[in-house]
Amino acid sequence: GENVEQHPSTLSVQEGDSAVIKCTYSDSASNYFPWYKQELGKRPQLIIDIRSNVGEKKDQRIAVTLNKTAKHFSLHITETQPEDSAVYFCAASIGTGRRALTFGSGTRLQVQP
Amino acid sequence: DVKVTQSSRYLVKRTGEKVFLECVQDMDHENMFWYRQDPGLGLRLIYFSYDVKMKEKGDIPEGYSVSREKKERFSLILESASTNQTSMYLCASSRPRGGGQFFGPGTRLTVL
Image 1 (spheres, helix red, strand yellow):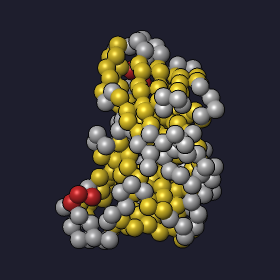
Image 2 (image 1 turned 90 degrees about the vertical axis):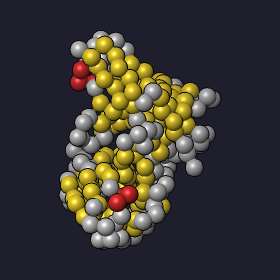
Image 3 (image 1 turned 30 degrees about the horizontal axis):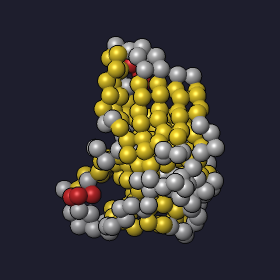
């Protein structure tokens, strides 16, 4: 089955700096890659996703890039703010609807004011 | 706005008890999922269902079963709770073509 590895496990940045979280996946048939943000004590929430026919997607300060050849994808957060502090999870699936997501182990991002 | 609710936020049970965790979604989603979340391990899939009365095992189904009698409701059952099942349990739902999953608030289960 699919295996998703996520790095780093913890990341500390200064407010205003950029943060990058990287994930690799094993199943070349995977074609859907979402990112979730989980604040302390709250449920994971989808923040951005990308499908394999797209190399990059951006939404304000957040962007995701995908390299299908290398089987890795990354989350980029620019101009970080204290409210970006959370645990971020990447995931991958064969997005036909009957296949579930496989999640990475998470990255705890701390933005220092 | 998608709403996924879970029957309890916190639950304390004794070893050997039968435990029911219930999840309800109001967006007519075909797919529903149960995960457990443990520190450093991310979210691990226990079971999922893509239709009423249909179920598929995830990565860690041992010690669990599920029931989907109605489209909006997906139950996770611990037949005989054990201490290693102490965890946060998250339910999620999604549309039939996959895509983003919407999560419930979670149930923190402690088995003593």
